[in-house]
Image (cartoon, rainbow, N blue to C red; front, side, top):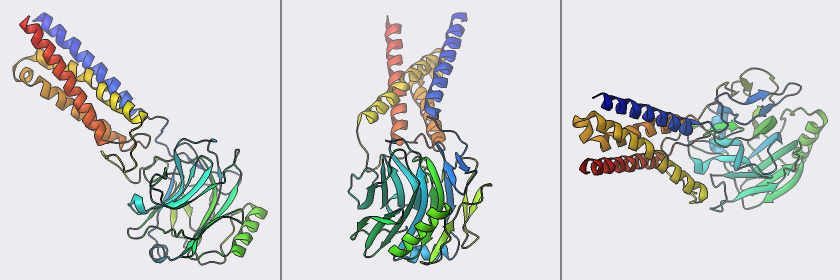
Length: 374
């Protein structure tokens, strides 16, 4: 009896140690902190975006919302400076308008030294969705005044008041339907952080003519203050000159606000997601499969041995109970990862964790049966 109690205590301690190791591995932040890494610039208007930062606004104020759904042409101005490395890892989102459908979102992003403007979520250009893509971010990056105009006769990108690229057959759209959410410095999922500074932002319900674009840049370069829109039917204007507080105000409506929450928000949550259509079975994927499968085998083995020591009904169902406990542990981790943009809650991880625990429990059960026969 005393020997049995010692084995129970030892197996319980081992189970706890392995459980804690799994929690540490499953919930490690990978550089993410729950504070929102966005700060006001001290000596001039603008916002600085750090490792994990976001500014967001639900565009539900009138007349903004009704204009977005009826636009046949629009223009966007944004003054910024990228602080990304020469070859940043992955696609970084500077500006997005998202209505709940990734395939219809409007984005302005950075991939390495390229500015990318497009609709949809074809980040790696695998599906060849049409876009503006221009190598405009030198190293070190300079301050840039960008103007994007689009309509039925094509899309143009102006850099510092000069036409940089034109696509006559490309017509971009702001997402219709559900009230869109605008973000600066990240995606609505919080998993595409961009590092840099934004000095002002404006939206227009028309295509800006070249002369207006030139004059707007001239005003910006002379004062380094984002100029007040006076032509082109503007409907959003954020000069970002508050310098303090948790909100930036649209100076046209004075009701639309851009929020700077102190805690990093996950605006759209993905729980137990399936592989996307851009899924790639590369070496990183296979490494994740191996780690998720093997990582729960020891816990399945130890729990099975622990339940076998207790006897009775629990011993008879040791494999099932071990797998069930590990399923609940994995489910808890995947649920917590929903609020961690540096991690992703995936169905395949839950399946692999549970399968690993089941294999470990089956192996332990087989070893115990062999021992008993001997």
